[in-house]
Every structure is written in C-alpha cells, then in structure tokens.
Length: 60
Image (tube, rainbow, N blue to C red; front, side, top):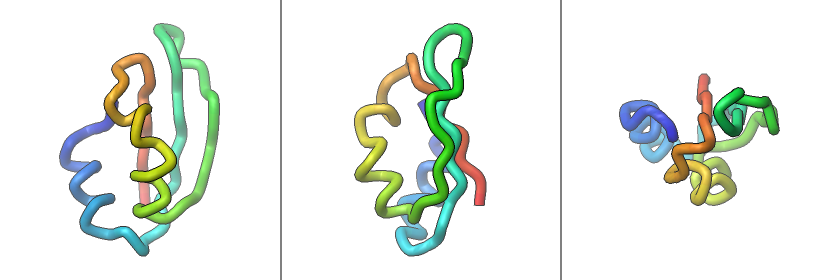
C-alpha cells in the first residue's frame, strides 16, 4: 500500500520523476529500487499499489 496523499501527488505529476522503493511481506524485504516518472509508476505498480503485502515508498 501507499499513502493516499503521496499517490495523489504522483497522479497529479505524471512527468515528474520519483524514487521508488518496493518492500514485500511481513519482513518488508526490499524487492526493488527505481527512479521512474509518475505515469510509469502508476502503470508499472498498479497491482502492488492495491496489495497490502507490498509497501511502496515514494519520494521526489
């Protein structure tokens, strides 16, 4: 899951680049580290954004 306020910021800035760290499971194991645009982020991580077993940390 991702913070709704952060998600709104990403949706409103599809051209902006964001740093994304994806964590998975109860232990919050790091499964990825990316720098991608807001539009790519929403497309690439559509399922993970809705799945509670993933934690997606986004910063700009």
